[in-house]
Image (cartoon, rainbow, N blue to C red):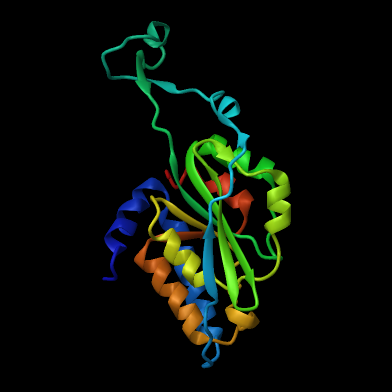
Length: 228
């Protein structure tokens, strides 16, 4: 058993199993189609730009408590004859880490980030891309704040270059860990021929129990199911 696979099996009870299996199946197919060439990842630089757009007021619109049938604070007495869920229980602020492939083949905007953070208020969101032999990973949302729309526009596009180093960074962040990408990975100088690059991605995804989602819409659809 690879390191971390026990955790992945437990997550099946949370609804994440099918997506984890899909991630592994698709990587296995890409490994099969890869050539025997050798590629290299670019050098990655990490940035923490100012998170100047405060979303706290919009995130607080969601309910912070839920009714339950056990507890010590009977607040919803009117529910007794319906489902006996009369007690008030504080809801857990769902979070985790989302890594977005921000190369030219992917697209998202500030409204997408807001909608994801409304589902997962404690989430950290980063994006990465690169060109030639270097790439950048940027923290674009955290603690209820995000970067400006202008920043997103200025730093999106180009190529991948640093998929591997970016996934290694994701592995050091709080679970659950989601990688938003079409999985068309590229190394330094646009190299796509390296079997070793896909093998590296496969190793990192399995080691850190990373789930791949194809776009932001899938994050909105599956974020709660994955119980980040």
